[in-house]
Amino acid sequence: MAAGDFRPISGRLSVAMFTTGTAINEGELVEIESNLAIKADAAIDANSFLGVCASTIDGAGQVAVYYDGIFEGTAGSAMDFGLGDLVYAGASGEVLDTGTSGDFPIGRVVGTNPASAGTVQFSLISCLTSHPGEAKA
Image (cartoon, rainbow, N blue to C red; front, top):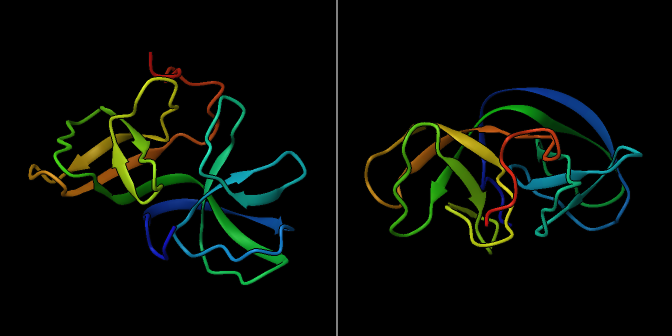
């Protein structure tokens, strides 16, 4: 993901240890592991606990991660969202889409630009195992 994929509108921060040694950019969707290590994660599954990186980190160290809040992202081409719709990270992880079979949602729409490929505001679903958004059939 490129820097700034998801811009925070409001949210709560936590400090997490980053241990993989690869760069993670501000605004990038990350998985928070049980030992509080984080990793950039394009593969979101039922056991993922998600966050959005609050700043860029070039290697190992500590970085703040949003684990809750309202974020803004870009809807994929020809994607029209309504209030309350579930959103999914697209295959590139940089845009929001309506998901395909087996995908897990990353949030629920709380504001949207009515134009296709517009701006979408969504409430992050951090813990994907305890919410109503099961894998898309």
